[in-house]
View 1 (cartoon, rainbow, N blue to C red):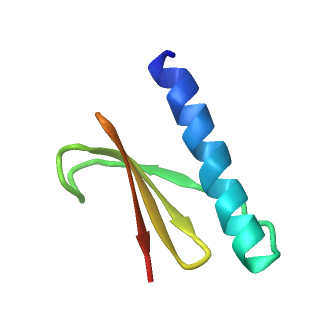
View 2 (spheres, helix red, strand yellow; view 1 turned 180 degrees about the vertical axis):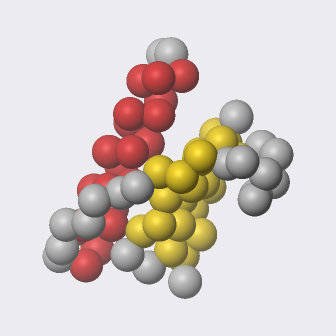
View 3 (spheres, one colour; view 1 turned 30 degrees about the vertical axis):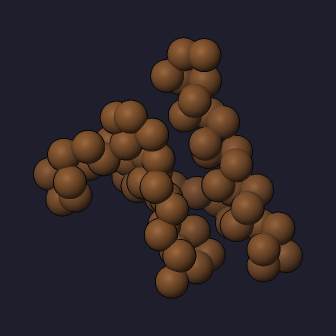
Length: 64
């Protein structure tokens, strides 16, 4: 699977998890890393109760 396909899959899963958990739909806005996070992070999106970080070799969820 290509990197582009992984990003699309991660976007869909994070949106779905966020929406199902709270019964609401939230548009995700992915913010490009321009040095504000660790160098492995490529993009960050805020979820209803946390964040998802798209990294060069995977992804991380942070829930508050």
